[in-house]
Image (cartoon, rainbow, N blue to C red; front, side):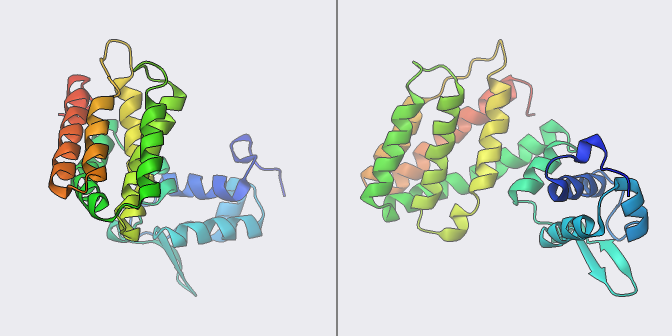
Length: 239
């Protein structure tokens, strides 16, 4: 067997899964179609049968494909795809128009985070509130400027808030929220775009959570999300 092509060197299973996933997400293999045969994929990708089968199993787990004896491997309807999986989020970023993806990501944040803040006001432990306060302090270490460290702290604050909601399923949306944050900040940090970290608004959310005031926590998070949407609109990334 020939050695794997350059784009597949490294974690072969994940790389093969990504290549096939991008073909599905990009429309080369539309829903309802059958993937090329195993022999064809092996010849195309230059990997072992074991590697290919493990990669396909990854895609089964993400709802992209299904395999049946004597029928081959087919692409499942898009309604079955696990869009909130962190790898799926990463893959879709490579094939979906940025404006569409951002609209989806901001939309889910606007639906989820205000309610997560309200629930956190009811359910957060003192340890979780302390951890959010530490994340907020870390966001301010660069005097309001964006740095990799402040971005990580921003992401940590929001993921901690989801966890503090007390709803494990809501906490499971953390990868989606992180992807939304990193994508939007990458745009609003561009030269010529004013992107304050909004420490005061984050502090308002945390203060309401610490005060056990769910209505105020919900409203403070809505204000923060309105600021985020306005920044992206001004940057031309959202309509």
